Length: 166
Image 1 (cartoon, one colour):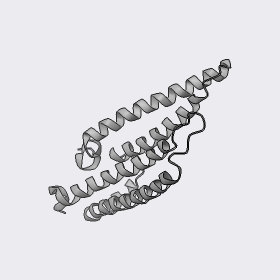
Image 2: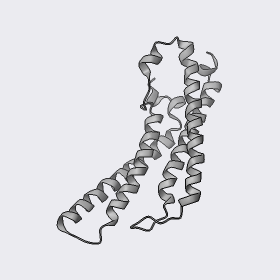
Image 3: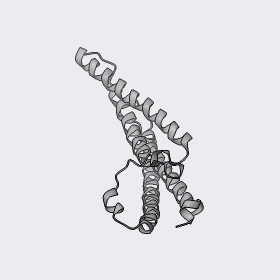
Image 4: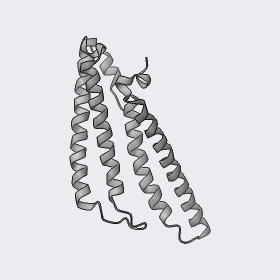
């Protein structure tokens, strides 16, 4: 079974599907806003300055959602060649170490993101005057989702038959 289809690695399928839909919608918003902004500049139309800010916010969200999806699908940066040289038991325990490191980084990002949220969440964006917290929320969501995924994988590591037997 590939990692993409392995529930122990990818997490709940409903989360994977929801993130794919959200990523697609936000990508289309990014693309549409950018194209509309380009056309508006070319023809000298005024009143469409908001398109670039919309594209910026949507792009930040797409980036974080894409990183979560890549991790869920097992397509994030890995040292597969080096890990393949290790014995099976060492590879098994290295999985736990990588999950714990990911969890630690996510918890650090979460505390850092909360600090940013507290200091600038209600500062308005330049054009649309939206709360800046919309952008910070993308980092917080990223950290929460990857923390959940790490805990999900750690749970499978200790409580599944395949993880407990090694």
